[in-house]
Length: 189
Image (cartoon, rainbow, N blue to C red; front, side):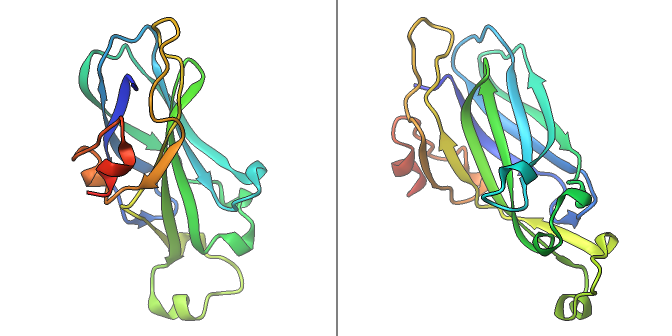
């Protein structure tokens, strides 16, 4: 079984301007003492299939992590517009939050982000040159959660739920009915 389970991810500034920092709160539960810190990363994916264009917006270490329910607030810089192909600026992109322990990713939470102009006229007739100061982003509240088996601190202990993936009803419901041993059943409730 996993020693760390995400209970909730709450975006504190959604929707927001494209150029605003990402601000969110992560709540997670730890069921055993950890020897090292947890590492969290925020990644912006503008063009699936072209990993070299992915932008790591920020990362942070959280620890020491006490047993019980914990939370932290995380700020990530906005993506660098010069690294996004022009044809991929507007529309849907992905925002991925990863959790790792001892360089082993144990959870990945993916969100869709829609980027569009802030007024109807520009939405219907986009300018030839992208005007980033007029763009707004809206992050979906229905994440996709993937868990991975890793080796935690105890010798040979491996977490259950290897690379399972299922739709989550909403970010606010991540802590309701989450069954780590059978995550797909819990998410279908």
